[in-house]
Image (cartoon, rainbow, N blue to C red; front, side, top):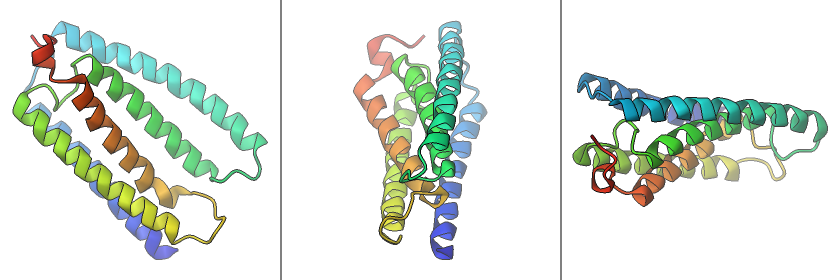
Length: 171
């Protein structure tokens, strides 16, 4: 079990470092959002806050009432956190106001990087689950699976939404 947790921590750290690097490089290029994009980001934060509050309340009732759940309360909280990340990101992606996805060259690199990170997270998460005892609850050590799913869904959504410049969403 100690090795699984170590690998999970390593994968989560790699994913978080990749996100921080992407965000920092976005600032370094001094990509300024226009008023429309700032408005979209603000609405995304408000929507995410409402979703997270509702999900946390529902999660609290779920944890109290479901004693033989196939997951631990820690796993549920991570799932709620991932849902919040996805709501915010998907809202902004759908409206053409997400960092790293606006410029065409950067967009391709971001999508490929996210898909690679997602595949790594899913592979690590599935391996972690397969290494568990039969009937064991999903726990915090399975975080790479959740993050992997997020990092596969987001670039697929970006591909489905298309290029913001081609849609006319860009300045």
